[in-house]
Length: 493
Image (cartoon, rainbow, N blue to C red; front, side):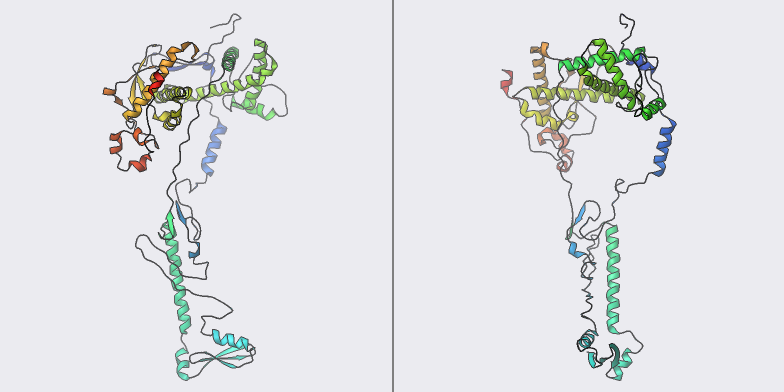
């Protein structure tokens, strides 16, 4: 269409012809096909070459410490005193879960300078107390120590003891060596246990996953009529500027050069005659911020508005640029022809309509938290009986989720009936399109093939046959106590 002065304000978008081919229309046909640059590809290659794998993100357990820390994933040690390196090589009890073997060591005390547990300890201690004057002191069975001038010399009382000791290792040294070997073995066993993430049930326990409550979605708030009218004018005016512009979309190199000079230059990115936006950068890139100022000034001059609305116009301009950017990205990925996304959109609109119905009625409002827990994922999907464009009387066949109970389905359909009756009684004050026609037969219901289900719902929200197929449905679903799915009869009065 053309305005009286020859300017076009056609909506830029996409259409699908009879052969199923999606094409751009209006100013959207001026979009280039490829926007990838060499700099983007080089940056992507650099990241892929220098990225360091994170073992924690890859599902690997990080190294664990011995005391007061975590042993493996989801395991917490509660006995900090069991660390063999804390209490002078005290007893170590290491339980291996597979074979239940334990490595135990008796206390090995190292208490210098008291000389305890030392074969020479009593003699050396006595010598120190006597001042080291060279007296002979008894050091043990058949063994004496002579001290001279602070030094000491080992001697034996009889030749038999001297013969036993001569050329051999003293029994006390053998005992120390044996305990050190036991300590080494215990340390190796401890290292193996830490590597295999095995811990003793008495000292460590596995922390079960905490139940995470689902975040409830807020009830949407409608914008004011004046706000919607201003947004519609912004979209229309932006379409007009993009249609008359010879090049409505700036390239990446030009946008980057402008961003580098934006801090030191007051030059605008474009004008009302050669208006262009940046779809490569963000909606609030340097180019788009400058374009927003140009757009707001041209918009105020055309509609003869006051200057105090300039901030609101800029905000709606950035919102519109964001929407255009999303449409362009969806088209490049083939998202416009994806039926799954279209069905999910219908599920979400159905959820919003039901949520608003409950929220706007004081008798139904107590059910709002339940519907928020159910979410749009708990809504039934539908399929159209025709995919031909321009058909005004489409009918949709309801596909009921296989996990949902008949009681819950009837409750949701009652909400739809109430919403339709409210719309018919007050049609002049209701905005938006009428609810689409959905065919549902409770005697011959069609189940969805989707295997996904919603967790943490009341137990009566799940189908009994579905629960029977889950051996451990309490762990899989984490259900809540039963909920009363009923609507008072007074609402129809």
